[in-house]
Length: 347
Image 1: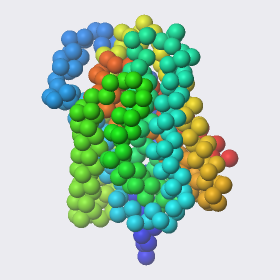
Image 2: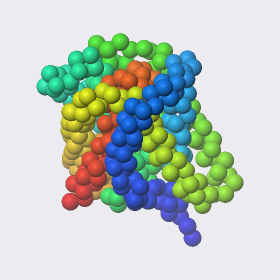
Image 3: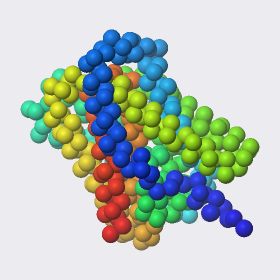
Image 4: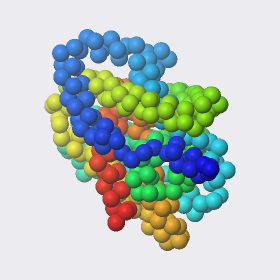
């Protein structure tokens, strides 16, 4: 007889597939493709950039929804009732995600981008780079953490309930935290656009995904949901890569002039991943949390919802902004850095 635990285990993503394992390579190739296409087809990219309605770029919005909705299909908000079962691990992860990570990233951004690396970066983009780093850290990862958890033999029910709780918090906390940290960085906060981004890229996808999930489960049960997730997984990744081609079609000229920018922006991102993962894992072990809870807790506490960050950066600051570029650097380093965290927590 199949238990509820077995069913939930099957809805958790399998180990990292070949395509995902080499995501950094595909991202690098898309960066190259975007730069080349931007040089040869500038008119086409400019036309796409002008396709805006109420400050929302329609091509990017469609691509972002194609990225986010399939990921949110994995989230079972019914798992929220299980939060109390592993309350110590949940408390640590929530604290890292919402009380530590955004603020530590802002501090690292001010330190490295705003001070140490300032002479090496375009002066006009300094604030925008910091804004992108803040956006990157202001929301916890929704999809890839299922993979990271599985690679560490993490408790799937904990991962599922933690992701569901984080998504619920994100609906209400993302805009205030971003607004606060951007304001502290003396960056003008376009509140109307920020709230519109929350509605478009968090609220609407969450509702759409949950309605879709219920419909699939009602028609075919868990097996149908598993098939749907397997079918849609390439859609999310292709949409992400297409978005990167668009971004670098606009960013290409700047990158060609200053390739060092990518490496410099990666420094605070990498540091904050190891910092937050280390703090989360240590706190869990101090509190007596078992290893199969401490591992996914550390990984959820360290990873970022870069799809949302990319969308929000484009909506708030535009395709050609330093903020959009900073969020894309987060995509570039995510897989290799998180795989190294997986290795470290397993040793």
